[in-house]
Length: 203
Ligand SMILES: C[S@@+](CC[C@H](N)C(=O)[O-])C[C@H]1O[C@@H](n2cnc3c(N)ncnc32)[C@H](O)[C@@H]1O
Image 1 (cartoon, rainbow, N blue to C red):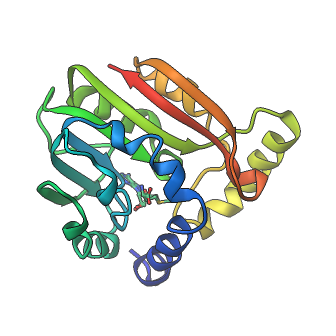
Image 2 (image 1 turned 180 degrees about the vertical axis):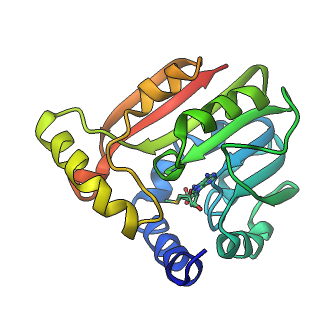
C-alpha cells in the first residue's frame, strides 16, 4: 500500500463519510441487519453504532490496515461483539452459509472485481439470509452517466479505486441475488457521486 492509501485516503474517507446527512442515509439500511452480520469494506467503522439488538455479532472485513486500526478504535460504539479482518471481499476466509446478513455501504464502488465480491457475499450468506446495501453508482440520466464514465479512470486514482459508474442493481442481480425493495435517487452532494441505490437482496 502506498503512502497516500496508507496515510491520507483513510482520513479523508473517514471525514467525508461521516459528514452531512450520510449518517441519516446509513440509518435506512444498517439497522435492518439481524443475526450474525458480515460488513464488507467496514472502513473506519462508522456503521457500528447503528446495528440493533437483533444483531449477535459483527464481522468486518477491509483490506486497508489503517482503516482496520481506525475501526478498532470504534468497536466500543457497537452493542455487540465485533471482529475485524484484514482482507478482501473478493476472496473471503469465511465458511459457506455462515452469515445471516451481509451489509455493504459505499463499498461496491471501490472493490476491483465487484462481480467476484458479490459472488462471495452470496456464498457466505445462509439460505434465507439478506444482503443490505447502500451504494452510489451509475446515474439514471444519460448525461450524468456519460460524465461518470469519462471521469472514472481519473477519479479511481484519487479515491481509493472508487468507480463512479457502476450499475449497482444489475451487478447484484448478475451475481444471482433477488433484489427486493430497491430504491434509487440523488442524495445530497455532487451529482456525479450522489446517485445511490439502496435496498435488500436475497441469495
Ligand atoms: C468509501 S469507503 C466506505 C467505507 C465504509 N463502508 C463506510 O460506509 O463508511 C470504501 C471502503 O471499501 C474498502 N475496500 C476497497 N477494496 C475492498 C475490497 N476488495 N474488499 C473489501 N473492502 C474493500 C476500502 O478500504 C474502504 O474502506
